[in-house]
Every structure is written in C-alpha cells, then in structure tokens.
Image 1 (cartoon, rainbow, N blue to C red):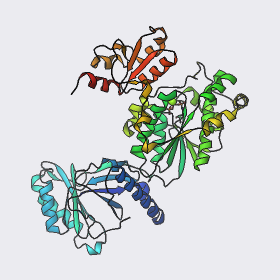
Image 2: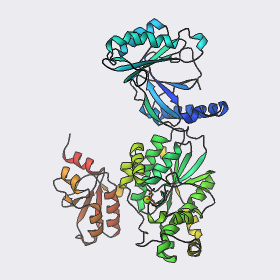
Image 3: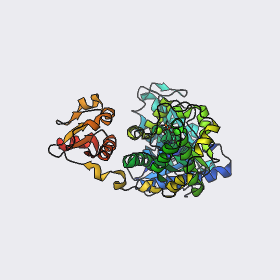
Image 4: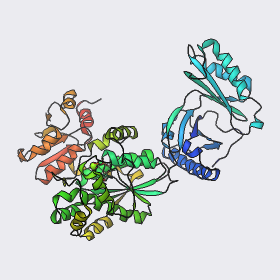
Length: 498
Ligand code: ATP
Ligand code: MG
C-alpha cells in the first residue's frame, strides 16, 4: 500500500478518481478499520489489474485516490465493495489560494450559470502543513462564481463545487457518483452459495458479497448441458463484476441419479422439500471442504409452495451448518430490481425452471416426521458420489467453449430446414427472419412431439438458451434439431450484413 505522498498523484496527465469509504468501514475501530482498508486496497488492485490498468492507489485519511491512464473508464471502481461514492477529479492545480480560485472559476463558471450553487472546500492531510483555510477558499471561489450564478445556496444547491486541498496540490470536481457501499469482500469470511441460475439465488449471493462474505457456488444440475451453460453465464456475471479480490469456484453436481432415486423411492408430494434438503446436504459437504462458515440460498417466505414457513423449517433441519437466507423477507419486485441493477436479470430470465420434479400438488406443510420417514428410504451414498464427482469451474477464467453448446449449434440455416422463432409474438413482429415461423417457447415445448420427423429444425430465441434447451430435448426424443448460435441478434447479422 502506498501511503500519503507529498503529491498524491505522480503522472500529471493521469485521470484521478477519489473514492470515499463506506459508512460501514468508517464506524469501525482504528485497528479494524486499518485491516478493512488493507483488504479494500488489495481488492482495488485486483479490479484495476482485471481491467488492464497498472494499480496506482494512494490512501490518505478516509479517502483513496486512484490514478488511471487518461480517458480510462472508471465505473468499475464503484463495484468494489466498501466504497460509498466516487468522484473523478476534473482539474488539479497548485495548492495556493489564488491558483485554486482562478482554476475553479474557469472550470465551473458555465456550469453554475443561472443555478443555485455551493462551494465546499476541505484540507486533506496534515493541516498544519496546509497554510490555506478552507473557509477562505469557499468564500473567494464563491464570490468569483457568483456573478454567473443565480445565487449561493448552502442548503440545497443545484451544483456543488468541491475543492480538496493537500500539501502540494488541490483537486477540483463537481461530480459525485454513488457506489455500492458495504464491506470489503473477504473481511467477513467465507460461505458456499446454492446457485440455481434463477433470479433469487444470484441476488442473495450479491447481497452477502456486499457484506464482505467471499463465496463459492454449488449448482445441482437438473437440466443437462443447457442448464449448466445458463447457470455458468449467471455465475460469470457475479464473478467478473462483483468478486474483485477473490476467485470464486463453481461446483457443478450432476443431480440426475439423485432425482431418479427420489422419484423411485419417495412420495411425490414431498419431492420438492426432499430435493431442497438434498441440495443443502450437497452444499454442506462442499462447505466442509472449503472451510466455509455458512450456506446461502435465495429462498424467501411464501414465494413458492416449497417455501412456506413450515417447509423452510423442515428444509433447514437437513443441515447443522448455518443457513443464510438474505432474501427471506423480500418481495419479488425488489429482487427483480436488484437483479437488473447487478446485471444478472437478462441471463436469469432465460434459465428455465429445469426442475421437472415439480408435482402438481406439493406438500405445503411437510411435517418433520413425514420427511424423516421419506428421507430414510433415500440412499445418501448416491448423493455423496454425485458430490464427489462435481466438476469445478474457475469462474473468472472461463473459456469460451465452456459457455457454448457446440454440438447443438448452427450458424447458418441449412436448405430445407424449418426455422422456428421461440420469442414472444411482439418480439417476433418487431423483427424476424423472412423464413422464420413463430411458435412461442412454451407452446413449442409442449407440441414438438407431433412435429414431422425426418425434417431438420433450427430454433432461435433472443439469447440462444431457450432454443438450446429445446433443441437438446428434441434431440433426446430423436429429432434432428439445432439451435442458432448467438440468438436473434446473430441471426439478424447473418442476413443483414453491416
Ligand atoms: P431461484 O430464483 O434462486 O431459482 P426460486 O424462487 O426459483 O429461487 P427454488 O427453485 O425453490 O426457488 O429454489 C430455492 C433456492 O434453492 C434457490 O434460491 C437456490 O438457493 C436453491 N436452489 C434451487 N435449485 C437449485 C439448483 N438446481 N442448484 C443449486 N441450488 C438450487
Ligand atoms: Mg428456481
């Protein structure tokens, strides 16, 4: 870590970004704060390196100053947890009052025109060595800007001009971008997260990443290669956007033998609850290997029939590990909003509900006794074997091939093939391939067994996941089916070359 330098930034052409610690970091005792800030700086180094920038990070008091090569986008810094807000420094100058007032007037005269404004100045560093009073800067720069502005308004200004004065330099800016706050990733230990690819579990993971909890992911595969690719794409967003400072692993467990065992030996109405218990046991086994203190799920009270309060109680009993359900009291709309903000929404949307275990009338209030009796018939060795054979994915270094489904994919429409567009009617009508027939996914999934055999089918959807899923299912039933790689965007490019 670089400590306060006489001039904090070395390269005069660099873009400077000022980061403020989150309240969660601020309120800690000195020793804890020191430890948290060290972790935060390590995570910032990782973020900068991941974005191809040599890390130049300076800390002073409750600020961090980052130097970026000119014109480098800096938005990713707001995704490093532990930072409350950030500002790109718009100009820097020598730290004497006249220079500051001149630079500030030139920079902000037009921006305050006709507006209510305020000037906020502060000294950063050893105040005894900074012979300028911040009040004087506020008054003098304020007076210089006033002729262009509507008026000074310290209560609710439309434009705030900030000046930070260090020993040798002053930094001027008017922007303040909110960041995610929270705690630096890693300061709160480690957990294992059950990730289904749906909206909830990704959001649950993110909420606890923001609380500093490092996570690895456990995925129980119920839907073949297309389910796996769908989940990997969601996990990759979490890993690449929100895991600065840590390299998460995803464990993919093939649950086919486990679900077969459930179907063969237990009563249908308990399948959902039993399946969740078995997933928890799988996660517990991996948590032990990873020395993780907790298991995270995306469950919320009452969201689906397996998540009644009573069922959640019965599910919890499957493990002694601490279970964290950060979404337990959230509404679906709140979860969806967060999914959009963190970048998982579009990808989670296309990960179908792969669980074909869902019975029509699941038990909404399974009793402990009933579940114990049912579960006693299940051979847990099958689960343990499946867990021990889990495949591991290094989520920040996925290869392209791991995110594609090559044998199902096609990039041109073969002559004579039937092209089926699986999107909604509105999407189909806004653009479609001239030869494409429209059949919405659900309907296609229900009716394909009656399609003409011996014909070749090419399916297309927006992102190429639903189409891959259906092509995989059709193939299992003996159809000659493919999906169009890259979805409708790629299809459109193939017929409308730029
Ligand atoms: P999600 O949106 O996360 O899929 P959900 O509302 O669809 O949640 P369920 O499908 O009942 O609810 O799943 C509840 C939780 O169980 C999920 O949030 C996740 O933590 C875990 N889970 C469900 N399916 C899987 C799976 N196939 N692999 C790993 N974990 C899973
Ligand atoms: Mg789900």
